[in-house]
Length: 347
Ligand code: UT7
Image 1 (cartoon, rainbow, N blue to C red):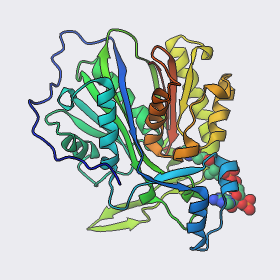
Image 2: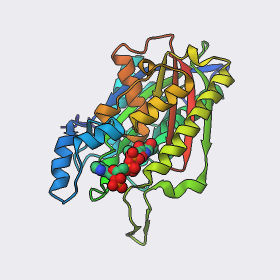
Image 3: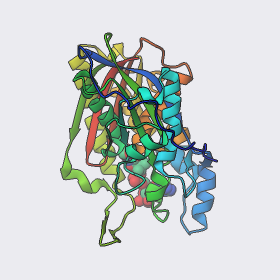
Image 4: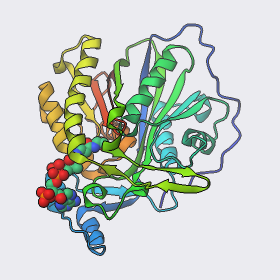
């Protein structure tokens, strides 16, 4: 069962938007949270389900090629916002802030509740917040790095003081369960952070990119017209093309943020990559000269949760005691678009 969302209460006041006397030089993560829908599906259980459709796969193939052992699937009537809300509440609790203290909400998602409005508006309402700006960021698996970069810029510009940045996905909705090359890879979940203006360094450097010539390698080629869904609104991926692009661009983005921050790779305490494939994650770490022990890994339990994967891994690292205050974290994402980016921060 997904945690019930209490009805929205009227806030004590409208959330403040800006009015800082001086723009803060930095933004800093002050709390993390995450939420997984309760239904955990192991590779064996998924393989058995797919076998009833005549699709052949195995735990052995999935583990060997991806590192994935299980993923979580939301119940059919549970939208991305219902995963985002408990993740956001956990992040606010960790940061010691109340919903009415939040003055910006950004949700990174490729599986929004509706065509519009933004899932961020639905999350805002479910959290009982009113008045602050809200919007979604659509950069697929790079979405959280994009959203955090935007929130950092808005906080340093004085546009917001205390942001909720969330990655939330129900990728199970867009999987083609007749395509074994993709349906075994993805899962559902949400992760969130509270990002606040700070006098001490938090986010140190960011680096975002995209190259639209690769739209076709990873896409959901459907759209709505005249009340009908046209095209095929199911995920398609050329896995090998994505693999090759990913290893190359992730290394470049990681080196770019280190260079911008003037830090050597050896200063990185934890690499928190997008969790798509253990081989890509280990390959990126190896290229940077980082030992595998410095890579936060949740892909074995979560599968690929797209924009939710990095904040889910970050929250896992924080709550398990792996990542400690003051440590340097390197976040990096890559996905459909083709989009990619990295972000270096002090926790
Ligand atoms: O989130 C955005 C970022 N996404 C990614 O980073 C994904 C990047 N790509 C990958 O992670 C990998 O390319 C995959 C995991 C998707 C595929 O791994 P691969 O090592 O590139 O496998 P492949 O596509 O070369 O397929 C190898 C074989 C094929 O059989 P043949 O042609 O050699 O006979 C596939 O048909 O494995 C077969 N295969 C499967 N077998 C059992 C493909 N999917 C499955 C499956 N179960 N689920």
